[in-house]
Image (cartoon, rainbow, N blue to C red; front, top):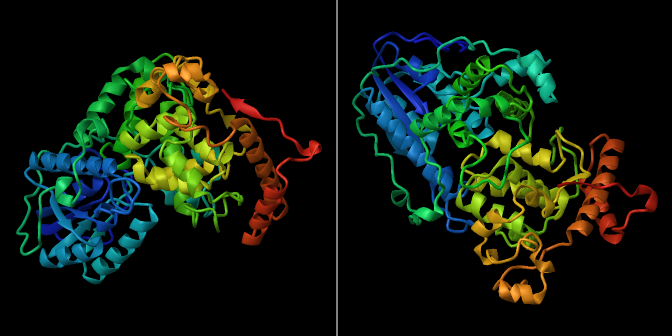
Length: 550
């Protein structure tokens, strides 16, 4: 089995030894170089997944069902993915060995008890896994265990791109694409030709369990209509990929940011992001499938807006995240503008719990985020802009935390990058361009069907008022059985006034970042925050033109 573009293992193990593949992401059989190498020449193969309490243990204090870091939808999606992986491994004469506990403790015990000579796991760029992997490498090296950790979650190796760029990540998408060039594996066959895996050896006294159910993890099961409609696993991911690629005209003409964020019966995108996040679908195989469609079309869109371009955006964000210390915060993050965001728990809760009084925003937050765990990219843009630079001026890190918990496709690099982008903290700086919480949704769905579906309290509101129900005369509100301020909240802010205030303080923050070359202290930010509170109206000479994205 050939896996191109993969770095060599640390040492050479003798054939006929025991191997362990440690699954974290990469929950698939196809295009899995770590699995292929672990199987090669091994007498016994131990496929392991560790239930990490950091991600899976119930947290009763969280604002939604789930663990400390993940909502129930993402946990369920992961369990479905593990069950599918187990089924696919069984077809090859193997099975998934699930254990519970702190990952390094569990792994060290397995490596010792099973006399493992070859340890394989997919390279992971996230700081948490980088820390785990450092500990594992030290232990394995000291024990004389061969380590093989290939890069297969992304199209390119982020470290290679950074090295090509003189030791720092490229600052723009265009420079990234130029540095990356064509993937080295582009002409290789990435679908697995495995027809058999070495059997699992004696597991000894290690406490192996089956893939647990939601209830077995300590959660209460929820009604089917409150769960995400997207089922986890490689089988479902490949089925969805195949269905998307069959619509060749749509693939060839894909153009982001176009698309209908109000489309809920059939989403206007592939919805492959959660399958890429967990590695149920290989981004490299996805890339090849798109290229195959494009080769057979007379014309097609190109990066950055094409479907291929979206995979390159993903790699760009992974590369910048990997090479930027403190990428997940504003403080001490060299690529992030220092901005005096509000810390306002009441506004944050109103946004998070779909109580802003703006139906377009609340429908997205209630149904697509909280219930489905997934949103169209333009819907994400709208609610992120509204929370930060558009209206509420709440810190992007607070919104990031909500998305990180509730999205089934929550991805450390991409989530942080998008929140910096949409708050105009990094990557994108046109802060005068605002997503209107009223007119933007109306452009796609003038009748308000999306709102009626996901905010049923407004289902009888006439279309003239459904995006601004507070403007409806009382007689209309009574007839629609929805009194604003009683049955549905009044708006938490005046959009026109709030957006102007947001832009003014961003203007002043940008000027201060420029003057101090980004080296703002906490005192500098507090002074700017206080100044804004004292005098919210900018001088006439400094007033800015507002552009609203309708």
